Length: 400
Ligand code: 13P
Ligand code: SF4
Image (cartoon, rainbow, N blue to C red; front, side):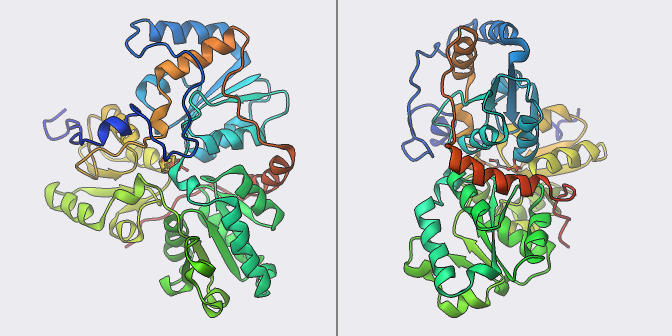
């Protein structure tokens, strides 16, 4: 490994402690404290305790780990993946009595919807929500849809909801002839929708919707309008809604939304020959300036396929970027931003919470079970099944 290839931790900021899951964050999707007696983080036996509880549970439990989880947690995952792969994997393990989801609340809800009634989904910390999912509440979405109905546009508008949303909004999507998408299949979902309607109502991530519509389907920025749930009528005129091809919900990821066009320019100036690789939840101007864009699985595959000695600046969650850098010391991998960028809610799942959840299950107590009510689950499943039936799983090609 050369000096330039060595991984350098981005600078810690005063926000870093909160981002690392210490202290309380009242603004998270759930914002709740753990109801149980957590082992102290200082317990030197935590790893051994997690291992023992995992072994005691055996094939009764299946542990899913999203790529943004901490190292201390990811080591206990039976499978790691992005949100699409984890949804598939939850559905593919009907024999597991317990699905322990090391990810965030909306992912655990999807796992509950996709698994049988005999299976129980556990989220080790209920405070692991998602700020993007918080940006679309079902009441707001129904108010917006009423507007489409009143204008006679509902029959020609297909809702597409990003996986990063509550089960209630997925159910709304199922009821209204739409589909779910993830960052792995957003293009296929938009193509599916435009084969069935004239316009797409894309929730809740404006950036994924805009990037996919413009960079993959060849629509123009003017074809996309932004619906702001905090403004009367979404801040759009009747004519704007009628003429739009894509109506984007005003939501974003607080992690990926932080990357700016300036940090891309700065990385190019700082690192000779660097290639910029970003997630499609990043702002449109960041994605436009990048060399490659795709889901977390795509990012991992791109780095695995990269030639030794190549230089990369990656714009996604820091746990994943750090693991990629450590796994590929022959490549020069850096974080796109100079300051830390963990997902604060993903990081809520730490080793003490995992130990507590696994030991409780092994002792016969199901803690932090995520249950979606029957009607919501039915309609959300309709929308999720449409996604799972979409042809192929791709990634956004590099913009020129
Ligand atoms: P993917 O897992 O689909 O890449 O989405 C990233 C993300 O933000 C998950 O919360
Ligand atoms: Fe939500 Fe962004 Fe965190 Fe994913 S990375 S869970 S979208 S806040």
